[in-house]
Length: 204
Image 1: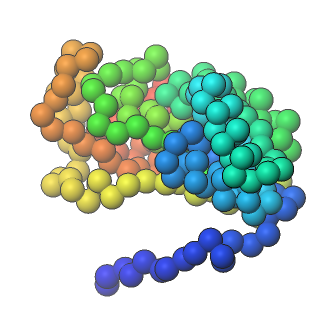
Image 2 (image 1 turned 45 degrees about the horizontal axis):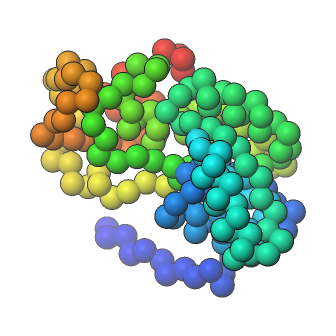
Image 3 (image 1 turned 120 degrees about the vertical axis):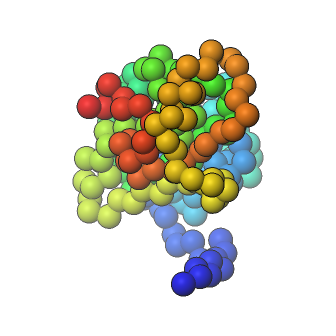
């Protein structure tokens, strides 16, 4: 059955006064627009990104568009599991969280492993968010109504087949910085649901 997307407008956004929303990747594009409109609706918005300078610049831009916007900043590098853990610890000061928007992501990166031995794109787009969501879970369920929104793309619809062990081995053997002719950007519901993704040691 073909899914027909529902039309939605900002006018339908409810009053979010008294709510806390965390938005990752808020310094450009959809992340900035999401953070700005949540702030316009009255939410306390936590801008979660890896660059303090960009977070400050984004906060200034949002405040210019929404005077009196209630904004906070949280430094986190989703490609680093250690950074995610540190950020989650710092987020304890926020109290209950009503909304977590997992928006940050990278695309078509050159073959590269993170400090945790993970593929950079998978770590940033999936594993980092998976860990962040789990660590913030007690705050998300604290008042019974927390929501998690994970943003993805339609690029997975262009894949001709599922990731294979052979491709995973080939990519692992590709020297850092070398480009590859074919790339796969699967969207997974958990860190172990894609066969091409190495199981992260820190998430075991």
